[in-house]
Length: 146
Image (cartoon, rainbow, N blue to C red; front, side):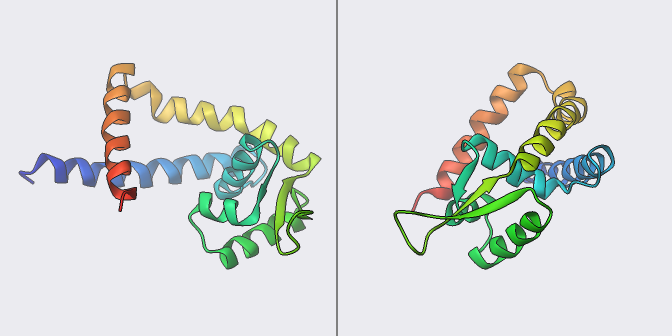
């Protein structure tokens, strides 16, 4: 492949797929079967102070509202999340971490970060990371602009 941007694109896709598969396997093995996708929800809620509106969660996960509802249903059944009615909007719903959800996140986060360091950060210098950040932010901004 002569075009270096196409090679970079293919490598980006391949590395992302391989890393996600490896990190998902490690998460499941080391965190009692916790799916990496569930960890992502717990992380988003943790970063949001423990709760988010359902539609904000759906946007963050890049899922439809109906898919997010089904996803959240399974996590509610597992005791990791609760739903709360929004007091300012009768149709609005918040999704919140339970105590168990917070504990699960707290136990899984250090293991997951260690996996990211082991499989990604250990192979990239700070300077290389800075170049990647600059380039990927530029691409993301271009994709998101009308």
